[in-house]
Length: 65
Length: 400
Image: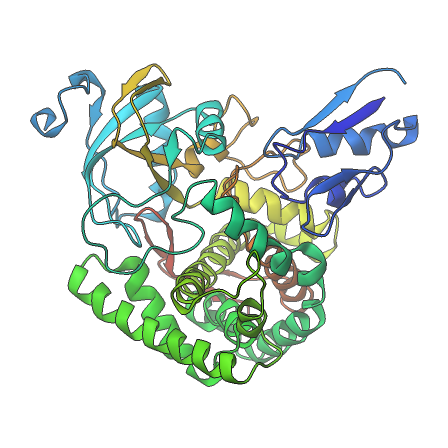
């Protein structure tokens, strides 16, 4: 699984790095950053939850590596 | 009724809707939900009270979460600039600005409200809540709104920005008039008092900075210059208005639900659900802000023709409770797996104070349920509507 944040849409709600702290972190303003763009299978549920928690729909998930 | 709507509004879309609803709390949110079946876009033929805009007769309302999201993210079409005519206060920064001006101020202020900065406030906030809850626990009952929900965030805010905490009751009063009064005269008087309080604070901290938020804002470098007094005042005014009453409303709605729902109280007390996720779900189901915007030009949107200057209401409760985005949206599911709620708005104007609000809510729910795990409603609950909604009276009891 691969994840990406659309930085032009992210406004720093901060949900991704709360629900998926192993996959996402944040910059100094609180905008989300991807820590692991290739998500190992044990963290896929976390990454999906982050995608489902982003009010801006700024997180994209793609299958494969 | 339809005679009042502008000629470009189809008569079939005109609805009466009372934003000053004062009826039972059970219908506070469902009356918004009911509008969803009336159409994708409606024209509400009503006077709209709000913090800064003069009441306007009539506004568009979009009922679908997808349209509301698109509108919040499209500041080029949906402007936040106040309309023409007198306002009771100077336009607040950055909420009443559009990009690119908005972007410059927002970029300047955002680091002061980042999760990392707010996290440093946690020990002091926790200690404050523990003191308040300890004092209440012994009493066996309380009126939650005035005894806790208003007092707690107001004290956090006043000490953070640098205002004297002893004057909290006065700030609560000013804030309440500015946000809820329907009298322009009353609001103008309260506005002048608030401007005086904040002007004094700005002058004092400009002369002698301290370790508080006002001093940090004064010290900011705005593209090579300091912020002018007028800019500082317009920023401080927004913080004063936005930071007090919203957390109080969120706390009150949450405890209103929990007082009636033993299973959810137990889940919180036993930490069966992360408090952070419970807070998101309580915010979603009780999303309480309706945001005013203005069409910046003629455009087609949500199946209707907007005319430049038309007032638009972006109803966050309608979006947060839309069944096309949330399964069984009127129910609380504390660990709801998919929760892209709208409680803090979204797009470039996303609530700047959201990280502080979340921290305050999490600490309050945690501490309260550790100390007072069981409680119930103890009388009539009353609420207020307006573009911002909340609870005025919430009696709770935990001892016979």
